[in-house]
Image: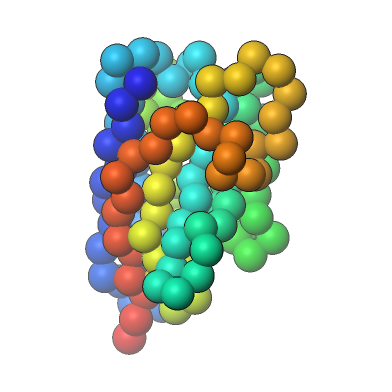
Length: 125
């Protein structure tokens, strides 16, 4: 599966953005899907994920209550809706797909098999 992330930009604190991850080659319903981010000088960190089987979701503590992950299997696209953005949310955001058929925590980057190219989100006044 090939993944293409988009929707990033420069926004003010308190604003909202919706990132998209368009998939091609295979349907995203076959994968656990996740969002990660990497700020300058930091390691890549988990943001949110949605499970293949039952669409249950997981969030990093830093974004829970502000970000929402969702998927539209008909459009073969995953989304990350980000509200109440903070300067510390500034990073390159990556989408990823995990093909495992067994249990996965979905929170470790090493669990994912396919990655999109990233989209920059900058939160600044």
